[in-house]
Length: 291
Image 1 (cartoon, one colour):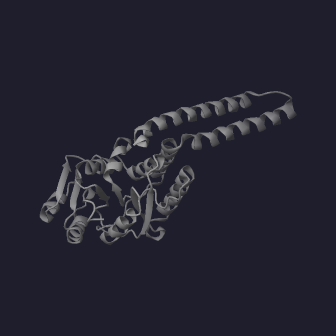
Image 2 (image 1 turned 60 degrees about the vertical axis):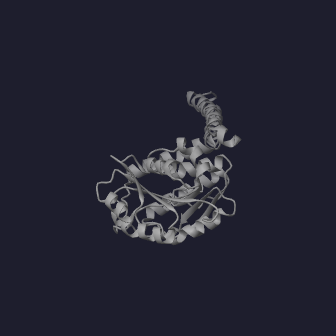
Image 3 (image 1 turned 90 degrees about the vertical axis):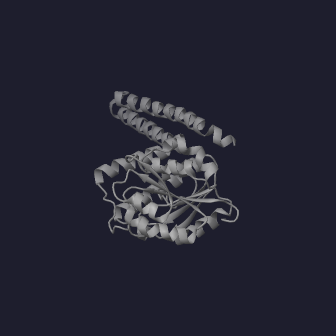
């Protein structure tokens, strides 16, 4: 892969100097010809000093704009036509990069490092990721092994087409994966082990806050990839519920109730919203699908 393509390795970093101290020397040793690009997302530690010490390219923001914003900046500024995205906290192993690159040689436009279930830091994260993967697989018709992994290799020219869709926050992996599937770009997976953070701590999961965040991701998956696959079952469920309730009230009270009317109207509205969303989704991918 390195003989045929130029390679850039992009590391979004927010206060990850401890992880970079170990990771950057490993990357420079394993990939001396690759461009290593650190996006310093408003860090308040000595991330910049560590990057300068190791002689890697760094782009610094005055304040944190989010992981997605760092990824977009990395893609725009990367000089290689193959880009590796990996976390700077030590969870992703340099030894796994060749496996991702070799998988890409089989004709994939993006290859994702799918974290083994046993390496997730908490039971809640395991459950959440399993749920996301299953839901996204149903939406796409493809087996998605890890929807939210930030460890991936992409073809820059393809990935760049979808930068405008990606949020500045946490869900760039979800958005990019669904965008690739939606536009017919092949996505491959390689099983990897996720290590522990260099600081020895893991992110804190808050049930209410992260539960709401997960719900937003789920709704976004449906609206982004195939709206009718999301809205049609809801519309059908409302219609069937209305029909059953009407049958019950007709038999017991010989009348058509307001609740039945509300359910039928809701079913129609959801269906029409799905059709409209499908058209908007098609417009999003029109240009990339034609190329």
